Image (cartoon, rainbow, N blue to C red; front, side, top):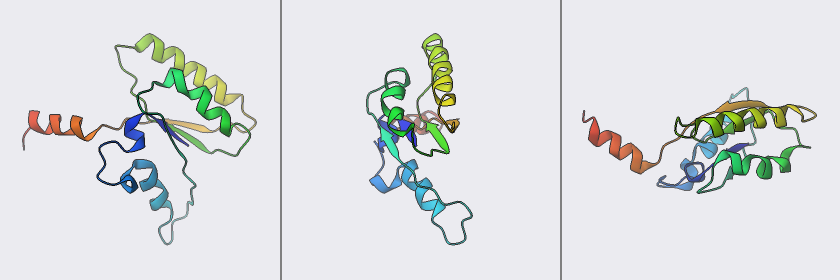
Length: 122
């Protein structure tokens, strides 16, 4: 399950099929891939992890979920909220009958990538 804001939705991607969740699904479908995945994109544009995780993930609690990939920024600006939220998310997922692994990633919008490219020209 991929959980995140507008970047998880694919905002900034030229095609929806280029979202990281779709790319992960496609990679697992390559011939000879030892790992088959069913990837669910649970994007909530304009949101933060502490307001969304419980609402979204409760729909998966009784299903077999191997990994939850969280695509929200954990910034210094909101460190105390983020630290508390991560602990609550971890505890909540550990209470599931079969707790999933948790992976934090951070994707960036095309607008941010362009700003970086302008700041550090090649």
